[in-house]
Amino acid sequence: MEPDAQQALLDAIQQADRAGARAVIEAWAETHPFERVVPDLLSPTLETFGRLWAHRKLGFSLATGYVAAKVAEDVLARLLEEAGARGEARAPLKGPVVLGNVEDDFHPLGRKMVGAFLRADGWDVQDLGVDVTPARFIEAAEACGARVIGASAMMYTTAKNAARLREAMEQRGLAGRVQLALGGAVFKLRPELVATFGGDGTAPSALEAPALFAELWQRASILAGEVEP
Image (cartoon, rainbow, N blue to C red; front, side, top):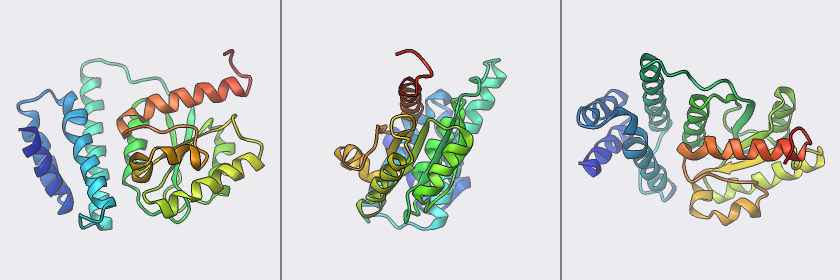
């Protein structure tokens, strides 16, 4: 049943049908624990969505990207609500992190997904949006005391701007003390580009982003001399 549900959810997102997507998820949850919706339904569907779009095999518009992000937010909001109803305490607020799409990149879905999972994990997320210059990334990180910058890019042509961000960080004396997480379709398809363009790490999916940011935050704190190795 999972492939059918994933296809139905993909179809609803492609049609920018938020209500239809919600209906697919609700129908799936009638026979599955809702806490499994992210790893078993939402995450694989959105990965397929991103892959097809990256290969130009899927029509895409601002509306479909918006709906995909909102579907993810709806699911996470319900998970948090149900956790609260069970008396489970939300994770204490963690440090500030900065997110944004690199300069000339206007594909927000992956970044919004990562931001949603980070917030659910207790991180204070400063989301700068799309087309973010290296200077804006750095100014935001310094202003809020972020130890991790998360930069997203969909295609190789814009991913190269991550190297400009790394160069600007080094010129500012932030190398090591602020870690650079890179994400987006191009880095998933070609993970070797993370190191090529100066990234300190990446995550296979938005679901695994909180663990990556925790690791990078710890590494930055050690290099900054704030904690013992």
